Length: 108
Image (cartoon, rainbow, N blue to C red; front, side, top):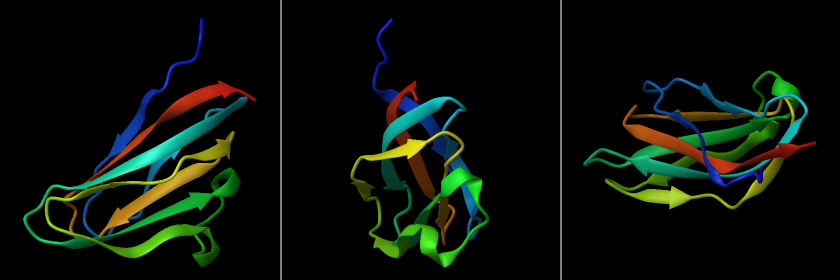
């Protein structure tokens, strides 16, 4: 059966809470893009980090940091490939943001 591009995970963390949004399963690699949607009528800021092998949070991991996201706006990231046990983490200042991880998981 062929692998199919689709939604792998969704997260809507509470305000000012860094949350694990997606972890690549063991023996897999994933190619993903993240759609970030502000569900509020007010602007907010978002963060997104990529932790190799689920390492503890550090400043070196951030791909977005306090990125301004307008009211009722959405953005998509570039596609990235991540390895087994790697973790994408997400955060927003408002708690009114949904992060959707779309992609494909393939055997490593």
